[in-house]
Image (tube, rainbow, N blue to C red; front, side, top):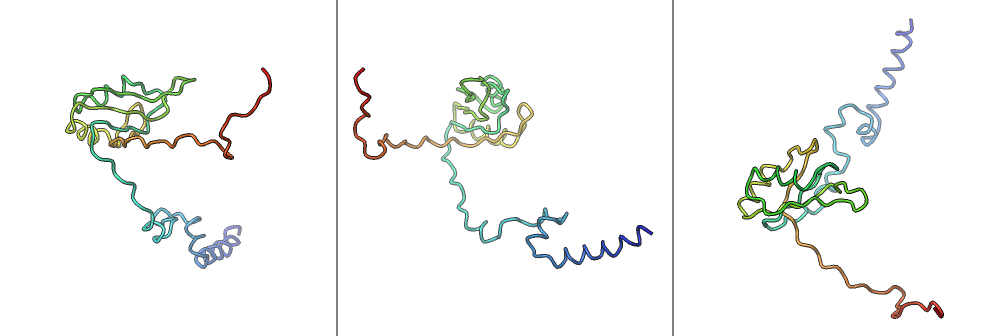
Length: 156
């Protein structure tokens, strides 16, 4: 009896989903994985991130908070001679900020390091390795509101 009462409600729900706008179907259907939430035009207009030029310095991201510089050096040493490995850490907690740098002795070793470690697990986390980009030059400090001198604090 209860099943017979549910059938009209289920069939009505199916027809509502079928006639729903495409955007809602993407949100609420179980086969939404094959649909993209972005329109194809938006995907084609986004510029690709420029690749850094090959160098001996690698940028490694996706590191665990527990990853140390020595652990990073050991993992990347399988692929060549590591000159330096540094995990960037938080000053207060001392834990990793999630990224670091590895410097190899040669360009060939750095290419092997990227091929061997990009997308691999380190300390339970998937890490990503790529050539490091040079630092951008920061702009010199410009005072706000055209104040060319420090504020007056009175007699001290």
